[in-house]
Amino acid sequence: MGQDTSLRAQFFQEALDILSNAEEIVLHLEQHGTDQEQVHSLFRLFHTLKGNSNMVGEEEINALTHVLESEYDQVRTGKRQLDENLLQLTFEVIDTLTAVAQEGDSQDYIEQMQTRAQELKNISASIAASAAETASRQGQGQNSASQASLSQAGRIEKSFQNEIEAGFSVWKPVLHSFFKCEELAFRLPTAKDELPELLMDLGMEVIELRSLIEGEAADTFAPLSRLSVYLEKLTATFAREQLAYNEISYELLYVLYDDFKRSMWEHLYFTGALGYKKIVTMEELDRIEAEVRPGDRLWIIELAFASENSVRRSDFFSRLIEIKRGLDVPLVFISPHSHYYRKAADLLSQALGSYSQIAGTLEEAVRMYILSEE
Amino acid sequence: MGKKLLIVDDSFLVRSGLQAALKKTGNWEDVILAENGRIGIDKIVSEKPDVVLMDVEMPEVDGLTALKEINAKKRAGDIPNNLPIVILSGTMYENNENVRKAKMLGAAEVIAKPEGKSSTLSIKVDELEEQVLKLL
View (cartoon, chains in turn red, purple):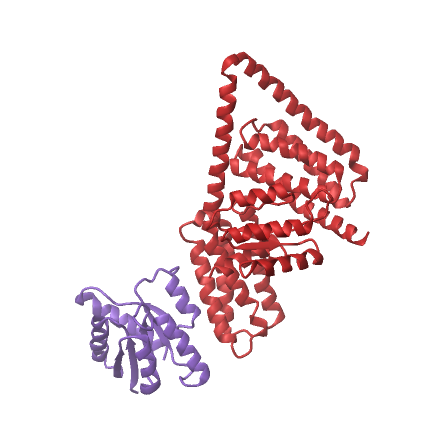
């Protein structure tokens, strides 16, 4: 069916992005060793891919990413170590899946994917066997030890959550300033009489942006530093020359904005400062109610109702409205998949009142959230 | 060739000190004063100075805000387009935000505020005057 094909195409497109992010993280882990934040990001990426593949009925991809997800869940919760074997296998899985996604069809890769899944299970089983051996040697202490490790896992997750929060709050002023710059810059071509003023405003904001980037958290923003200097210099030229719209110079300006944005998102994802979750089942939705606290910063909900085992849309919406009424938190909805969901989200947003906003992508959602905080 | 200079600074010491020093050099027909950006803009319009020296940090209307308004008035034709506005800055560190902002807003020059003991002050005022005269 038509809608099916476009959903699948979108799935593979997104898969490519996810896999390339995952590859970068695996490279990083290989070079720098275990890094909780990175492991968590990797886990999240495979988790997303698993969920997505389920939605489009890609069983083999689903099975393979499920194994990967559990492996990194074990690493993340300290139940197993990250070793070269796992990293190597992860590389190979990413390669295979990238080939599938590029092809846009998994038919020719089914056997290969099954082999990879089996290999992953094998190394996991061998680790479990040796762990069991150690545990049985330790005898009586086993029970309390496993409990201790469980509560420790909980702590690790909690502290990770805090780090994300802290990470994002460092980024917030930069994001805010950048979005303002971008907004002003994109008004330039159509500005007539107000061009000089617009250029001055843009100039001031670009300087603010650079000051933020070169400020207290300069280490975090180091990759953006050079771009921010270029942005300022180019804007200064525009302001000095009172440059009205012409293709070449403006093209250059927008290329700079694009580069800046790409770099910014890469670092936001890569450092794990930006996290998101996907709600597919009613249980996951219920969990939101328990997890959200008044004053929480951002809850993004991706609306996706593609597979049969997900909840009925109307049930989902009414439950969500219920939750929202009980909690005073701003919500941004993301509904990237199709026009249809967007419409549904739109209706939902109306029911929820002025807090809620609709965004097409995660980036857009973050942008709306940041700008709404003025 | 009498030129008129306007000094906009909230510090009485800077204002009157600079005025006295510049009057002595004999290069100026008149050195007039304003204590903030608002009064500065009014005097630019009413007194028509040939050059303006303006501080950044000032109460009511600061130097950068005043620069923006002056730009708008230049575009509207209320202030001559070629009137040079020289920004006096406490810090001359090139990366200083105010220095960069002043340049972005079209300041003709950003010059360090002359300060120090009276013995060295006159040298600094001479240097400042030399830079300002170049703009005319």
